[in-house]
Length: 362
Image 1: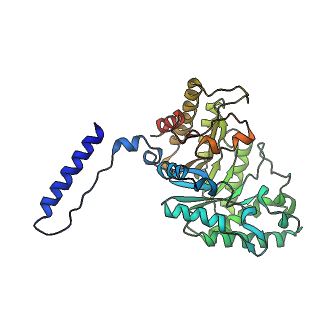
Image 2 (image 1 turned 180 degrees about the vertical axis):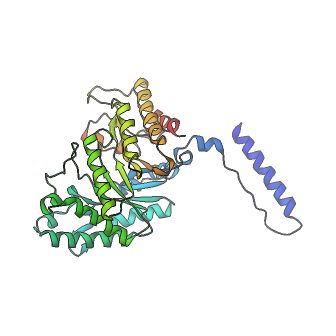
Image 3 (image 1 turned 90 degrees about the horizontal axis):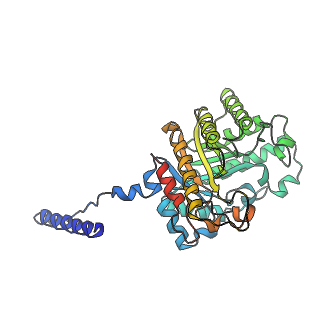
Protein backbone atom coordinates (compact mmCIF):
# COMPACT_ATOMS: atom_id res chain seq x y z
CA UNK A 1 0.00 0.00 0.00
CA UNK A 2 2.84 2.36 0.80
CA UNK A 3 4.24 2.17 -2.76
CA UNK A 4 0.85 2.94 -4.29
CA UNK A 5 0.38 5.95 -1.99
CA UNK A 6 3.77 7.31 -2.98
CA UNK A 7 2.97 6.90 -6.68
CA UNK A 8 -0.39 8.64 -6.33
CA UNK A 9 1.26 11.47 -4.42
CA UNK A 10 3.89 11.88 -7.12
CA UNK A 11 1.25 11.99 -9.85
CA UNK A 12 -0.67 14.65 -7.94
CA UNK A 13 2.52 16.66 -7.46
CA UNK A 14 3.40 16.38 -11.14
CA UNK A 15 -0.11 17.27 -12.21
CA UNK A 16 -0.35 20.31 -9.96
CA UNK A 17 3.09 21.43 -11.02
CA UNK A 18 2.17 21.23 -14.70
CA UNK A 19 -1.04 23.24 -14.18
CA UNK A 20 0.66 25.89 -12.11
CA UNK A 21 3.42 26.40 -14.66
CA UNK A 22 1.30 26.20 -17.80
CA UNK A 23 0.83 29.95 -18.10
CA UNK A 24 4.50 30.82 -17.66
CA UNK A 25 5.85 28.20 -20.05
CA UNK A 26 8.42 27.04 -17.44
CA UNK A 27 9.32 23.40 -16.97
CA UNK A 28 7.61 21.96 -13.89
CA UNK A 29 9.85 21.23 -10.89
CA UNK A 30 8.85 18.27 -8.74
CA UNK A 31 10.38 17.98 -5.27
CA UNK A 32 10.21 14.50 -3.80
CA UNK A 33 10.20 14.72 -0.01
CA UNK A 34 12.52 12.57 2.06
CA UNK A 35 11.01 9.36 3.31
CA UNK A 36 11.41 9.33 7.11
CA UNK A 37 10.79 5.59 7.19
CA UNK A 38 13.76 5.01 4.90
CA UNK A 39 16.00 7.03 7.22
CA UNK A 40 14.95 4.89 10.17
CA UNK A 41 15.91 1.73 8.26
CA UNK A 42 19.33 2.82 7.01
CA UNK A 43 22.36 3.36 9.24
CA UNK A 44 23.94 5.88 6.85
CA UNK A 45 20.81 8.01 6.80
CA UNK A 46 19.97 7.71 10.48
CA UNK A 47 23.41 8.35 11.98
CA UNK A 48 24.50 11.90 12.80
CA UNK A 49 28.11 10.94 12.11
CA UNK A 50 29.84 9.06 9.30
CA UNK A 51 29.39 5.33 8.84
CA UNK A 52 32.50 3.80 7.32
CA UNK A 53 33.68 0.45 6.00
CA UNK A 54 37.09 -1.02 5.25
CA UNK A 55 37.22 -1.98 1.59
CA UNK A 56 39.51 -3.44 -1.06
CA UNK A 57 39.61 -2.67 -4.76
CA UNK A 58 38.91 -6.30 -5.56
CA UNK A 59 35.66 -6.11 -3.61
CA UNK A 60 34.71 -2.75 -5.11
CA UNK A 61 34.70 -4.35 -8.55
CA UNK A 62 31.66 -6.43 -7.55
CA UNK A 63 28.36 -4.72 -8.38
CA UNK A 64 26.43 -6.11 -5.40
CA UNK A 65 29.21 -5.19 -2.99
CA UNK A 66 29.58 -1.68 -4.40
CA UNK A 67 25.83 -1.07 -4.31
CA UNK A 68 25.60 -2.22 -0.68
CA UNK A 69 28.48 0.07 0.20
CA UNK A 70 26.97 3.11 -1.52
CA UNK A 71 23.59 2.52 0.07
CA UNK A 72 24.60 2.00 3.68
CA UNK A 73 27.97 3.73 4.17
CA UNK A 74 29.25 7.29 3.79
CA UNK A 75 33.00 6.75 4.24
CA UNK A 76 35.62 4.18 3.29
CA UNK A 77 38.96 3.08 4.68
CA UNK A 78 41.44 1.16 2.54
CA UNK A 79 42.06 -2.22 4.12
CA UNK A 80 45.63 -2.28 2.77
CA UNK A 81 45.94 -0.23 -0.45
CA UNK A 82 47.03 2.95 1.35
CA UNK A 83 49.58 1.41 3.70
CA UNK A 84 53.22 2.32 3.25
CA UNK A 85 54.48 -1.00 1.88
CA UNK A 86 51.82 -0.96 -0.85
CA UNK A 87 52.70 2.54 -2.05
CA UNK A 88 56.41 3.07 -1.36
CA UNK A 89 58.36 0.72 -3.63
CA UNK A 90 61.69 2.54 -3.44
CA UNK A 91 63.12 5.81 -2.16
CA UNK A 92 61.80 7.68 -5.22
CA UNK A 93 59.43 4.99 -6.49
CA UNK A 94 55.75 5.34 -5.61
CA UNK A 95 52.98 3.07 -6.87
CA UNK A 96 49.79 5.13 -6.71
CA UNK A 97 47.55 2.91 -8.84
CA UNK A 98 45.64 1.03 -6.12
CA UNK A 99 45.21 4.01 -3.81
CA UNK A 100 44.12 6.22 -6.71
CA UNK A 101 41.52 3.67 -7.77
CA UNK A 102 40.03 3.61 -4.30
CA UNK A 103 39.98 7.39 -3.89
CA UNK A 104 38.43 7.78 -7.35
CA UNK A 105 35.66 5.34 -6.39
CA UNK A 106 34.90 7.41 -3.31
CA UNK A 107 34.78 10.65 -5.25
CA UNK A 108 32.56 9.17 -7.95
CA UNK A 109 30.15 7.91 -5.32
CA UNK A 110 30.21 10.99 -3.06
CA UNK A 111 31.90 9.13 -0.20
CA UNK A 112 34.61 10.30 2.16
CA UNK A 113 38.00 8.59 2.58
CA UNK A 114 39.78 7.97 5.88
CA UNK A 115 43.48 7.40 5.15
CA UNK A 116 44.98 4.33 6.78
CA UNK A 117 47.82 4.54 7.65
CA UNK A 118 50.89 6.77 7.24
CA UNK A 119 53.26 5.21 9.81
CA UNK A 120 52.80 1.65 11.07
CA UNK A 121 55.59 -0.54 12.36
CA UNK A 122 54.36 -3.52 10.33
CA UNK A 123 54.17 -1.70 7.00
CA UNK A 124 57.65 -0.31 6.52
CA UNK A 125 58.79 -1.78 3.18
CA UNK A 126 61.61 -4.30 3.19
CA UNK A 127 63.89 -2.08 1.10
CA UNK A 128 63.59 0.63 3.75
CA UNK A 129 64.23 -1.66 6.70
CA UNK A 130 67.29 -3.20 5.07
CA UNK A 131 68.85 0.22 4.40
CA UNK A 132 69.84 0.62 8.08
CA UNK A 133 69.37 4.39 8.05
CA UNK A 134 70.50 6.45 11.01
CA UNK A 135 67.82 8.53 12.73
CA UNK A 136 68.37 11.63 10.58
CA UNK A 137 68.19 9.76 7.26
CA UNK A 138 65.29 7.65 8.51
CA UNK A 139 63.22 10.69 9.45
CA UNK A 140 64.12 12.64 6.33
CA UNK A 141 62.81 9.88 4.10
CA UNK A 142 59.66 9.28 6.15
CA UNK A 143 58.98 13.02 6.14
CA UNK A 144 59.21 13.05 2.34
CA UNK A 145 56.93 10.03 2.12
CA UNK A 146 54.27 11.65 4.34
CA UNK A 147 54.46 14.90 2.42
CA UNK A 148 54.05 13.22 -0.98
CA UNK A 149 51.18 10.99 0.10
CA UNK A 150 49.24 13.69 1.91
CA UNK A 151 49.83 16.18 -0.90
CA UNK A 152 48.56 13.74 -3.54
CA UNK A 153 45.30 13.19 -1.70
CA UNK A 154 44.87 16.67 -0.24
CA UNK A 155 41.21 17.58 -0.41
CA UNK A 156 40.29 13.99 -1.26
CA UNK A 157 41.19 12.24 2.02
CA UNK A 158 39.43 13.89 4.96
CA UNK A 159 41.44 12.25 7.74
CA UNK A 160 44.54 10.14 8.37
CA UNK A 161 45.70 7.57 10.86
CA UNK A 162 49.11 9.20 11.10
CA UNK A 163 50.46 6.62 13.54
CA UNK A 164 49.15 3.14 14.26
CA UNK A 165 49.76 0.64 17.09
CA UNK A 166 52.80 2.08 18.84
CA UNK A 167 51.89 0.95 22.38
CA UNK A 168 51.58 -2.40 24.09
CA UNK A 169 48.49 -3.02 26.20
CA UNK A 170 50.43 -2.25 29.39
CA UNK A 171 51.37 1.18 28.05
CA UNK A 172 54.99 0.49 27.13
CA UNK A 173 56.24 1.32 23.67
CA UNK A 174 56.13 -1.45 21.10
CA UNK A 175 59.72 -2.56 20.56
CA UNK A 176 59.59 -5.90 18.73
CA UNK A 177 59.97 -5.53 14.96
CA UNK A 178 59.42 -1.78 15.26
CA UNK A 179 61.90 0.24 13.16
CA UNK A 180 60.94 3.47 14.91
CA UNK A 181 61.71 2.11 18.38
CA UNK A 182 64.98 0.63 17.12
CA UNK A 183 66.09 3.93 15.55
CA UNK A 184 65.02 6.77 17.87
CA UNK A 185 65.87 7.50 21.46
CA UNK A 186 62.59 9.39 21.76
CA UNK A 187 60.02 7.65 19.53
CA UNK A 188 57.12 9.78 20.80
CA UNK A 189 58.81 12.95 19.60
CA UNK A 190 59.36 11.35 16.19
CA UNK A 191 55.67 10.45 15.94
CA UNK A 192 54.76 14.00 16.98
CA UNK A 193 56.85 15.38 14.14
CA UNK A 194 55.08 13.00 11.74
CA UNK A 195 51.77 14.55 12.77
CA UNK A 196 53.28 17.99 12.16
CA UNK A 197 54.51 16.99 8.69
CA UNK A 198 51.00 15.86 7.75
CA UNK A 199 49.36 19.00 9.14
CA UNK A 200 51.75 21.26 7.25
CA UNK A 201 50.67 19.74 3.93
CA UNK A 202 46.92 19.50 4.58
CA UNK A 203 45.70 21.75 7.41
CA UNK A 204 42.10 20.60 6.87
CA UNK A 205 42.65 16.85 7.29
CA UNK A 206 41.86 15.39 10.72
CA UNK A 207 44.83 13.55 12.21
CA UNK A 208 44.36 10.42 14.34
CA UNK A 209 46.29 8.00 16.46
CA UNK A 210 44.86 4.47 16.04
CA UNK A 211 45.31 1.31 18.13
CA UNK A 212 43.53 -1.83 19.32
CA UNK A 213 42.21 -2.91 22.75
CA UNK A 214 42.10 0.74 23.76
CA UNK A 215 38.85 0.58 25.74
CA UNK A 216 39.94 -2.66 27.42
CA UNK A 217 43.54 -1.82 28.34
CA UNK A 218 43.84 1.00 30.86
CA UNK A 219 47.63 0.98 30.55
CA UNK A 220 47.41 1.67 26.82
CA UNK A 221 44.84 4.42 27.36
CA UNK A 222 47.08 6.02 29.94
CA UNK A 223 50.04 5.99 27.56
CA UNK A 224 47.88 7.48 24.83
CA UNK A 225 46.71 10.23 27.14
CA UNK A 226 50.31 11.03 28.10
CA UNK A 227 51.20 11.17 24.40
CA UNK A 228 48.30 13.53 23.68
CA UNK A 229 49.29 15.77 26.59
CA UNK A 230 52.87 15.88 25.37
CA UNK A 231 51.83 16.61 21.80
CA UNK A 232 49.69 19.49 22.97
CA UNK A 233 52.41 20.86 25.23
CA UNK A 234 55.04 20.61 22.48
CA UNK A 235 52.82 22.01 19.73
CA UNK A 236 52.30 18.81 17.75
CA UNK A 237 48.82 18.52 16.19
CA UNK A 238 46.44 15.67 16.94
CA UNK A 239 42.69 15.70 16.35
CA UNK A 240 41.46 12.28 17.32
CA UNK A 241 41.91 8.80 18.75
CA UNK A 242 40.80 5.54 17.18
CA UNK A 243 40.06 2.18 18.75
CA UNK A 244 39.81 -0.69 16.32
CA UNK A 245 37.06 -2.52 18.28
CA UNK A 246 37.85 -6.08 17.20
CA UNK A 247 35.84 -7.51 20.10
CA UNK A 248 33.47 -10.41 20.88
CA UNK A 249 29.87 -10.81 21.94
CA UNK A 250 31.33 -11.96 25.27
CA UNK A 251 33.53 -8.89 25.84
CA UNK A 252 32.43 -7.17 29.04
CA UNK A 253 30.11 -4.31 28.12
CA UNK A 254 30.79 -2.23 31.21
CA UNK A 255 34.51 -2.34 30.45
CA UNK A 256 33.82 -1.19 26.89
CA UNK A 257 31.54 1.63 28.03
CA UNK A 258 33.88 2.86 30.76
CA UNK A 259 36.90 2.70 28.47
CA UNK A 260 35.11 4.62 25.74
CA UNK A 261 34.09 7.29 28.25
CA UNK A 262 37.71 7.51 29.37
CA UNK A 263 38.87 7.92 25.77
CA UNK A 264 36.38 10.74 25.28
CA UNK A 265 37.87 12.43 28.33
CA UNK A 266 40.74 13.44 26.06
CA UNK A 267 38.40 15.95 24.42
CA UNK A 268 39.48 14.69 20.98
CA UNK A 269 37.45 13.16 18.18
CA UNK A 270 36.77 9.47 18.77
CA UNK A 271 36.73 6.93 15.93
CA UNK A 272 35.53 3.34 16.27
CA UNK A 273 37.82 2.50 13.42
CA UNK A 274 37.73 -1.24 12.64
CA UNK A 275 34.59 -2.64 14.20
CA UNK A 276 33.69 -6.31 13.95
CA UNK A 277 32.18 -8.53 16.63
CA UNK A 278 33.05 -12.22 16.83
CA UNK A 279 30.26 -14.66 17.67
CA UNK A 280 32.12 -17.99 17.52
CA UNK A 281 34.08 -17.03 20.60
CA UNK A 282 35.38 -20.54 21.35
CA UNK A 283 36.38 -21.30 17.75
CA UNK A 284 34.05 -24.27 17.60
CA UNK A 285 34.20 -26.34 14.42
CA UNK A 286 30.52 -27.26 14.76
CA UNK A 287 29.38 -23.71 15.52
CA UNK A 288 25.99 -22.72 14.05
CA UNK A 289 24.86 -19.10 13.76
CA UNK A 290 21.45 -19.84 15.24
CA UNK A 291 18.72 -17.21 15.80
CA UNK A 292 19.71 -17.10 19.47
CA UNK A 293 23.30 -16.31 18.47
CA UNK A 294 22.07 -13.70 16.01
CA UNK A 295 20.11 -12.05 18.82
CA UNK A 296 23.23 -11.88 21.02
CA UNK A 297 25.10 -10.38 18.09
CA UNK A 298 22.44 -7.72 17.55
CA UNK A 299 22.53 -6.82 21.25
CA UNK A 300 26.31 -6.41 21.14
CA UNK A 301 26.11 -4.05 18.17
CA UNK A 302 23.25 -2.14 19.76
CA UNK A 303 25.16 -1.65 23.01
CA UNK A 304 28.41 -0.56 21.37
CA UNK A 305 26.64 1.95 19.14
CA UNK A 306 24.63 3.28 22.08
CA UNK A 307 27.84 3.68 24.14
CA UNK A 308 29.32 5.67 21.27
CA UNK A 309 26.18 7.80 21.06
CA UNK A 310 26.62 8.67 24.74
CA UNK A 311 29.85 10.60 24.18
CA UNK A 312 29.58 14.32 23.31
CA UNK A 313 28.22 14.91 19.81
CA UNK A 314 31.17 17.08 18.79
CA UNK A 315 33.56 14.18 19.48
CA UNK A 316 31.81 11.64 17.27
CA UNK A 317 33.89 11.19 14.13
CA UNK A 318 32.70 7.87 12.68
CA UNK A 319 32.00 4.21 13.26
CA UNK A 320 33.81 2.09 10.68
CA UNK A 321 33.21 -1.64 10.28
CA UNK A 322 36.17 -3.72 9.17
CA UNK A 323 34.44 -5.05 6.10
CA UNK A 324 30.92 -5.05 4.72
CA UNK A 325 29.70 -8.65 4.45
CA UNK A 326 30.75 -11.83 6.26
CA UNK A 327 32.17 -13.36 3.08
CA UNK A 328 34.95 -10.76 3.08
CA UNK A 329 35.96 -10.76 6.74
CA UNK A 330 39.60 -11.26 7.66
CA UNK A 331 38.41 -13.21 10.70
CA UNK A 332 37.55 -16.31 8.68
CA UNK A 333 41.27 -16.66 8.00
CA UNK A 334 42.71 -15.37 11.28
CA UNK A 335 40.06 -16.57 13.75
CA UNK A 336 37.84 -19.37 12.41
CA UNK A 337 36.13 -20.24 9.10
CA UNK A 338 32.77 -20.30 10.87
CA UNK A 339 32.66 -16.65 11.84
CA UNK A 340 29.94 -14.09 11.09
CA UNK A 341 31.12 -10.76 12.52
CA UNK A 342 29.62 -8.09 10.24
CA UNK A 343 26.30 -6.42 9.38
CA UNK A 344 25.59 -8.24 6.10
CA UNK A 345 25.58 -11.96 5.36
CA UNK A 346 27.40 -13.73 2.53
CA UNK A 347 24.62 -12.71 0.13
CA UNK A 348 24.73 -9.03 1.20
CA UNK A 349 21.44 -9.28 3.05
CA UNK A 350 20.94 -7.27 6.24
CA UNK A 351 21.44 -9.32 9.40
CA UNK A 352 19.91 -8.89 12.82
CA UNK A 353 23.23 -7.30 13.71
CA UNK A 354 22.33 -4.47 11.31
CA UNK A 355 19.04 -3.98 13.15
CA UNK A 356 20.95 -3.89 16.43
CA UNK A 357 23.22 -1.20 15.04
CA UNK A 358 20.15 0.81 14.03
CA UNK A 359 18.63 0.44 17.49
CA UNK A 360 21.78 1.84 19.06
CA UNK A 361 21.61 5.05 17.06
CA UNK A 362 19.87 8.06 18.62
